Length: 104
Image 1 (cartoon, one colour):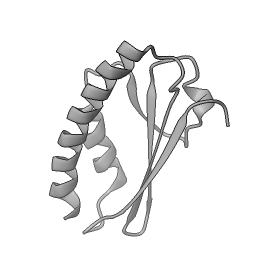
Image 2 (cartoon, one colour):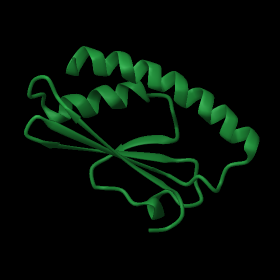
Image 3 (spheres, helix red, strand yellow):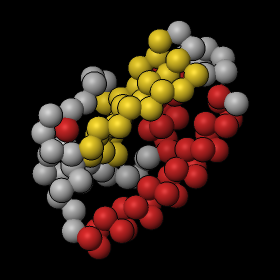
Image 4 (cartoon, one colour):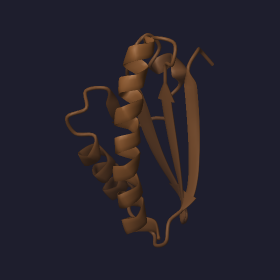
């Protein structure tokens, strides 16, 4: 593994939802964000090394949804990280609303 952060999020869907629908919802949520990409193959930190990109990969196994994301946390300055953290918190609020709609 190259430098960076790899996050794996596991959740159980309340109903079987088509993976393309979930991917489309995420893509719509991050439309206009030049750095966030929903990808087709499982990402590695090497894929985003030296960039501001965040790659998100989705995998469904029965009623379980696995979300994998990667970022390079060493490329950013302190100020850029603070700005990105603010946007990430805002997106987390939006994602929580979306999550509650689909999974609870």
